[in-house]
View (cartoon, rainbow, N blue to C red):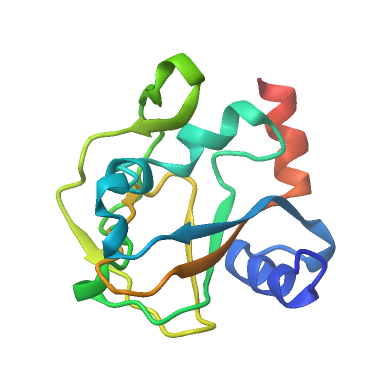
Length: 168
C-alpha cells in the first residue's frame, strides 16, 4: 500500500508540493476491537495528542508532516469516530508521556490539553481523513460489534525534512 502512488499524490496535493518530494513514513494498521473487549478500552483509546508528540523524536518527519488515515470500515459519531480539533492553527505543545504497562514498556501514550473546539470526522469505507502533525486529535472507542481496521501513514516533504534536520 505504501508504494501506491495515489497516497503520495493526495499527500502532495494537501502539502502543496510535487509528488517526487513526498516521503511516506511510519505506515501501519490500527485495529480497534469491538465493544465486547471493553475491559481493554484503556489500551485501545488514545487521549488528546498531536501526532508530533509520538513521531518527531523518531525522525523522518517534521512538524509540518501530515497523517493520512484510510478507513476500512464505516465510522460515525455513535460508534466512535475520531475527534479532530478545529479552529486556528496549532503550535507544538509539550506532551506528557507514559506507559500504561510501565514494567513491560508497553502501550505508550502521550497527551496534550483538550482543544476548545473539535469535530467528529465521520467516514465511509475507503475514505481518507487527513490532518497535520500539530492538530490535536483523539481516538474514539469502537462501540460497534465489529473489528475496525484503519491504514495509517504519515507523509512529509523531503525538502522540508532536510531543512528541519539542519535546524535541529
